[in-house]
Length: 574
Image (cartoon, rainbow, N blue to C red; front, side, top):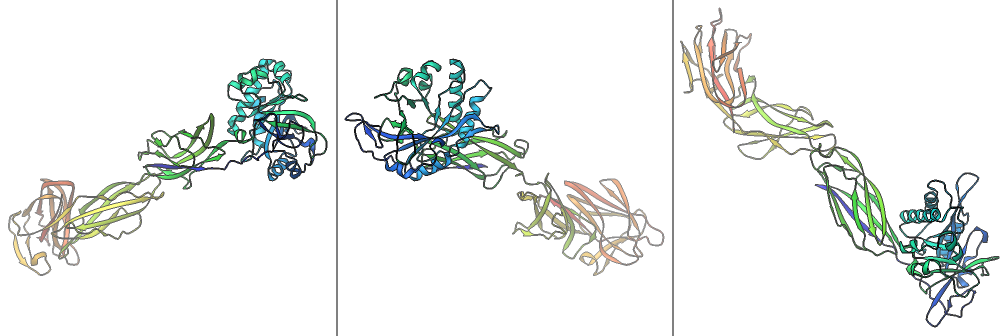
């Protein structure tokens, strides 16, 4: 059996771009058309420097997008990196006004180890990307006195880390002069997949594009003024233009993975459900899934490439052998790859005790007591063990192949019980056990036990010396034999796994020596202050069937020499 993981695909609808109104090229508040075929959308970029913004007025002024400062590489007096105090407010209010939003980080490169990654993680932890957002941006305006190669490495590290954190490749904000002087006019990043350029080039009719026309991709956003006037904003504000009529191609488009095991754990050798959800935002590509960190001894099968708006099943198979997959917590990493984006989520797979108790099947043997008129007393024993402890046992029996019926036990965890079995029948017993982790074993059945009664006059019983017969209603079958002379003997030959000698006890009874298969075992004293008919005076038990002889030799005890042979009982296994 295995861990079945259902992959739930959760989609978020793309936000439709607003229809723009074509006009002549201006720096005003509406979308512009630069020629007969190209429509460009107008927008702004803002920070806390713009103070409180009336976003409905900005929307009414025709601004279709706003790129909002979220963070800065500046270290504050508290030692933390800077967060723009108005980012969350601007982001929420711009969205509420129907304006597409973006977020940018003002880079402060320096040569400190891991600086780019720390700034990237700071930014990714603060931005709130979702439907209606465009891809995030790196604002690159200062070099931090780094060499061209060092700055290239810093920018690459920042971009790669934000991609890893957000699941989307950011855009780059720069000016033509800065890129040429401090980044060596490199087109490597554009070629590597960072295709979206936000170019800052003011007071020109068209921007100059560095890096060989940004690797052939051209500009996507153009900051064409650093001091425009927009309704709803006091003072100067940066004006931007999008190179197209539909922002959907630059919308934040990604997915995230989440995972959980509702049941909390999976038992060894069993099946349990888990949920892995693919949370999509403007994302419809197939997601290729993989799982790593599986415990030893397990195998995994799954639909490795679920499509959008569908689900896939992932099954982790844990063997029942506890040594192959021990109990414990195993951290799994579930990875999804699509459209050049890699997303991961962690899942703690808790492998719990799923192994039921180990049982040794019930074994039935004769015991001392009293032979009934149609039954014989036996003991039925079995063993059950488990590392977590056995908390309950159950026993059933079937007579002559009939229905299994329950047998009452002296306690919940008992592994032995005495019973009276009917004579002349075939009886089978089966047991099972439950451990403290609610694992219950299968029924474990012992051999069929046949009970047989042989009276003292049976052909398999032979006598030496003087034996007398006597009739008595208290004896098995209404009669018995007895001897008083020392050395008189009775020998019973049988095939079976258990044997019992049935005799009478009383004040006049004496002792007898017991030999089994020719070997002296012990001396049995039948003397008793009170009479006891059909007493089981001696029992012998073996693990398997065999041919055996039971020889009873009269001792001839002074004053009470009598020894009775009433009957013999045997058990045989099949």
